[in-house]
Image 1 (cartoon, rainbow, N blue to C red):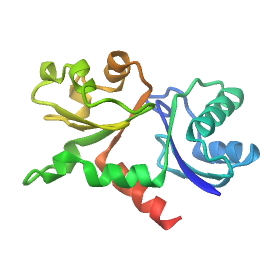
Image 2: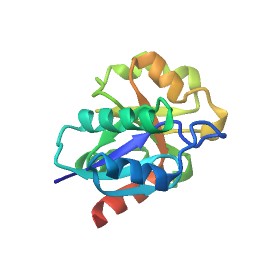
Image 3: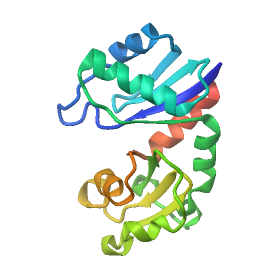
Image 4: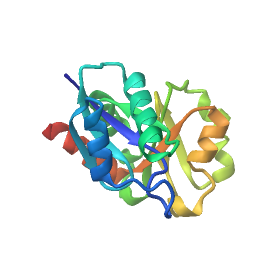
Length: 181
C-alpha cells in the first residue's frame, strides 16, 4: 500500500468549485482509495492505494471529481519523501529572523530544470523571491500572497505546468500528518 498526498488546486475558493471534504472523502473511498484523510478545506487529501504511480492517482482523483462534482480540478500528487525533501531544502529557512508567514511552496506537475527560474523572470516581481528545486518552487513574498502577480496562474503560464501553492504552515502540517500515518 502506498500513501499519496493529492494537492487539489482551486477548490472552495471565493465560492467557486465548492466541495465538502466529507463528500470528497466518501467519493474517493467509493473508487477504492483507503484511509482517505483530508486536511483543511483547500484540498489536501491523503489516500492509500495499491497504485504506486502518482500521475495515475492524480488522474483518477481528477476524473472522479469531475464525474461526481462537475468541477475540472487540477491535481498534483506527491509522496512523503518529496514533502520531507521540500521541508529540508527550503533555502529561505536559512535566513536569519525569517517570517515563515511569507513563505510558500508551489508544487508543480513536472520536474523543472534549474534554468527554469530564468523563464519566471522573477526580477520583475522584486522584492518577492523564488528558488526552484525539482518539482517545487520556493517562494518568499515580501508583502503577501494576495498582493503579488507572482502566483500560480503566472507560474503555470510561464512554465507550461500545473501548479498549486501552499503556505509554509500548511506544508509543515502536511508533513506532520504524513509522519503520523
